[in-house]
Amino acid sequence: MGYCSKDCQRADWKDHKPSCKGSLTGKPAISRNPVIKIAEKIAFDEGIMTQVDCILVLVLDLIHHPENAKTSGVALAAHVEFTDTMWAKSHIESLISGREPPKLPDMIPKLFQISKAVTIGADIMPKALEEGAALQVQKLRDEGTLTEEGNILVRALWVDEGNGSEISQSTFYFYRGISRELIEEVASWKGATGGPVTADDLILSVFRPCIMVVPVSISYLANSEFNRTNYVDLARRRKMSTMVPSKQD
Image (cartoon, rainbow, N blue to C red; front, side, top):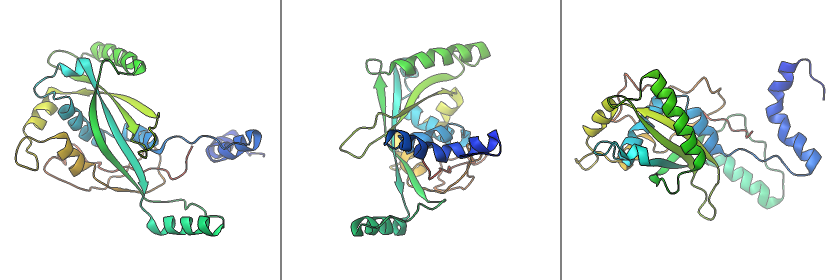
């Protein structure tokens, strides 16, 4: 296959790589996990990550025990589902009848949802996550933002919750410098029952099923506003949904 320029070749390589590798090895290229792909995009959006920060605060109970950030991290389990039922029905009917399924459209709605957020102790903390945290701590200290009165560094990771029969090994590590101001704000919120807000309250109110459409670049995330509640400060958290590609790498 010939290309008019290197730029043209690079632009086509993402789609061409799986078929090219498959023709050489007889096996299709392994696609990256869709949950991890979305997590990578979310990491660039401070509006969404601020909401994630609030969940981290509650899971680690940084309101009452900020020292927990030094000994524990947080694992966020999520899943992605297709929401275009008409396309899914057509796809299944084609497979049952032995026909080639229709081509996947360039744009397809997907659903991204956090199902659970749990602490991970030092005994099961991935080594790479700890090593990365050490580098982040040094970076924040050099910047002067990690002090007793400043940001608290939290270690966390995204993981695909799997389909129940198997656990995905795909993960995405990330680190957040959470301010005392944000912790105090979260402490003032009320939950669904009138008591202090919980991590489950935030997951249900902010990360409940939302429709995401494609395609976009990492630098451009949707600015649609959905599931707005009293937990959301509109002035500081404008972006509440993200766009995800339907094609796998």
